[in-house]
Image (tube, rainbow, N blue to C red):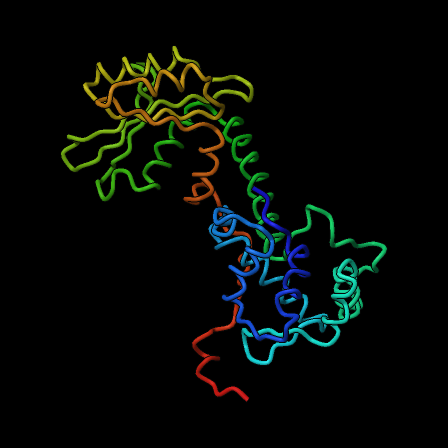
Length: 303
């Protein structure tokens, strides 16, 4: 699935407006999709970040840039119509994106010159997409640092860490001392225990494997853990590793009966959970992005 980039939507937007009609942002989606031959699946496709529908968001940015460059007008908030320059440029649609780029560059003297910037490559993103993309890149770097740091600590510290993580995630609730790291000399294949209730009738057993990158957890390791659960007369287990699981291990886990519940958490998921729940993390910077309050502005009388 390839959703058109925002600059690829500029000319179709002008085509929709060339009859002089005034169109609200929310009313662009279906006509644009039809004009560009998009499927319904492509139209409703959302960002992985959960930041809404990708196509209409990119259309919104296309309209913003067309407005800033003077090719479309906004007679009212959220309403667009084509301008004289927009009609003129539609005679040579291949020049629209270049014109928009040049006009935006003029608005900001600090912006690199045209020869240094090209807004047409396939990888070009909207500013908002670039922000989220950068954020994901930062997180990926931190994830790698989390695993590297864990692997530099003593194995017993990892066992303490995974118990703390499950507690941070809400397991054990308000139970006093709900988490326990078992004694290494006689752990019976169980590295940690989470008590789910005050009496300790419900328990989650934990196995922690701190493996170096490239070493996988195999089926045999999971089988031993299942055996340890059977001895403990429990059917709830969480197996956590800093590495990854071999396919045989995953297949075996999936083949277990419904009465035995084992959750596998690999290094990637472990780092994501550490980051999400803030275990061993501190907030370095907060960026606040604001947008217009529709209710506030719509309550005002239009000119």
